[in-house]
Amino acid sequence: MIVREESLVIRNVVTVEEVIPHDEWFLPALGLRRNLVNEDIYYTSPVVFKVEEMKNEPSFGKYTYYIGLNTEVEVGEDANFKQLEYLEITPAIYVRCPEVDELEEAYELLRHYAKENGLEIDESFYHVCFDAFDNVIMDIYAQVKEG
Image (cartoon, rainbow, N blue to C red; front, side, top):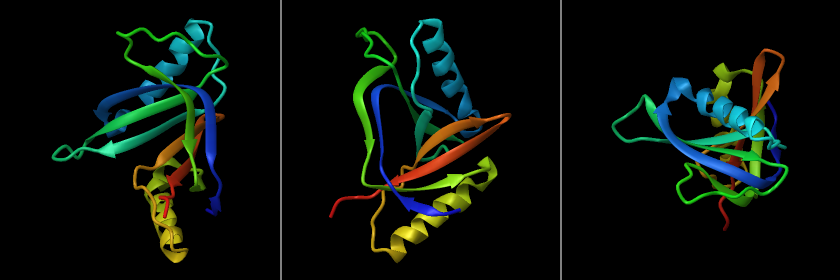
C-alpha cells in the first residue's frame, strides 16, 4: 500500500448518521444507494463513511455516510438525512486498501506516514467504498489537521 497526499471533494452530498454494530457497516450504504435510485436520483460518487468509536460499546460505532448526487434535493425537516453542498477532506493523506481485512494495517500505515512527515491527523478515518466485481476496495483518508 502506498500513501498519497491528496484531497477528496464531492458535491451535492446526502449524509445520514446511524449507530450500528461494526459488522453491519455496509447495510446503511446499500440502503442509501437503493433508496436514491428508487427516487430517480442518481449518485455520482462512491459511498463514503466515517466511524466514531463509542465509549463502553466496543462492538458498536456511530457511522456517518456520504454520497454525492447529480443534483440538489429538497430535504424535509423530518428527514433522517441532510444535504451538504460539499464534502471536503482537505488537506488529506490516503491509502488504497484492496482487502477489508487489511483496514487496521491501512490505519497504521497512515499513522506512521503522518508521524514520519510531521503531520497531525484526525483519527476519524474516511472510507471511500468502490465495488470491484464481488469485492469492495476502500480508499482510507485521514484529514490532516491545520497548523
